[in-house]
Length: 157
Image 1: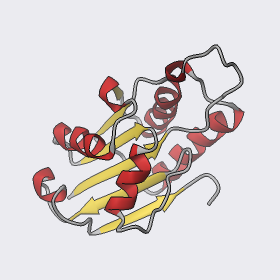
Image 2 (image 1 turned 120 degrees about the vertical axis):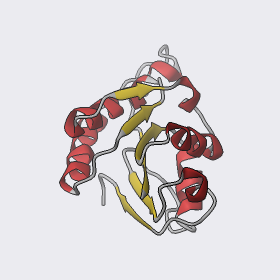
Image 3 (image 1 turned 180 degrees about the vertical axis):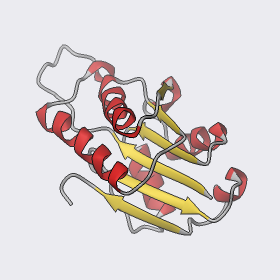
């Protein structure tokens, strides 16, 4: 089985206009939501083989919360910063792992979640988690057919 978990970074802090987009930290809500959502994923019994994250501070901090809760190291990938949906999916498939978690940004995350859910997930809110599963062990097949199932959760759900 191939499983893809999409995690949009938690809520970031826009308080200092001098901070570059790439270096924006999480705000208080984001710092609270990331470990909470990671705990929910752990409670559901999901443990990715690989966690790949954008290098942006807000995504990296979110990914580290998931990595700590799930006992998985985080691989940083600059290609995930601002990546479109097709690139996010390609980066997941390129790992070859059975279960992959991608932590990145909108609009790519929402576009991919919408596509993979057949339109049922219209938007990935901050720290939203969408998990897609295919009945195959082959990423080439998984990226070519609809997911067999999916779940969605967010801090405000």
